[in-house]
Structure formats: C-alpha cells, structure tokens
Image (cartoon, rainbow, N blue to C red; front, top):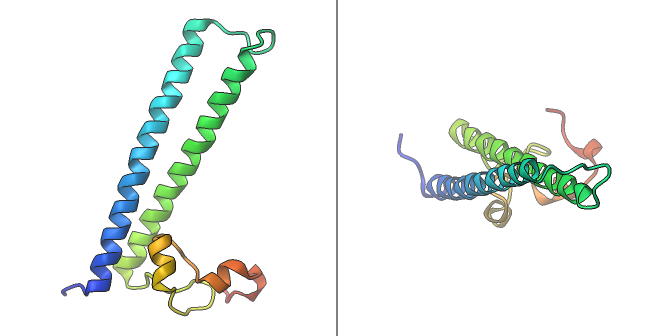
Length: 126
C-alpha cells in the first residue's frame, strides 16, 4: 500500500524529532560521563567540600535531563507505532483528529488541544 502525503510528512516529522532526541540523549550521556569522570579524579567529598554539592547537583540535573530525553524517545517511538497502525493523529481522549498545527508543533502528541487542556475525567475511557 502506498502512503499518502500526510503519512509521509508525519513520518518525516517523527524521524526528524527522533534524530534530534537521539542527538540530545548522546550529548547528555557525554556530559554525564564527563561530570562523573571529573568527580572521580577530583576526589570530592560531597558532605564536607563546598564544591561537592555542586558536582552532585550537576550530576542529578544531567540525569534528570537524560531521563526526560529517554522518555521523549519512547513517546516518539509510540507515535511511530500509531502511524504504522493508522491511528496517528487521532486524539486518545475524544477520538477526533488532532489538528495539523498541533502535530507539527508536537509530532508525538496523543491528544487534541482541548483534551490536553481539559480535566482527565472528560476524556473517553481507553
């Protein structure tokens, strides 16, 4: 089956977003490794060294950003699966099409703007 233009543009948008997320993940992993390595060679004592808490904070901050980047990759992979199943761009909350503008801004969007802004109780059951 030949894919339609919207499918191709969605596929391209998801591929581009995933490539950016992969680059971000790699950069963060390098940064995390650099902080860990520098803290090993500096022999810091987080409890007694005034610089120790800074290193600990920096490591925790990078780890949080890395966790978020990995979640982003998971979301993009799930969006790709929805595209393959033919349900990409359909709101999981109300079942209506997600606007093109929303999908362009957030290719992994699962819900329309109204459902994203509304209370979870207003959404249809999965």
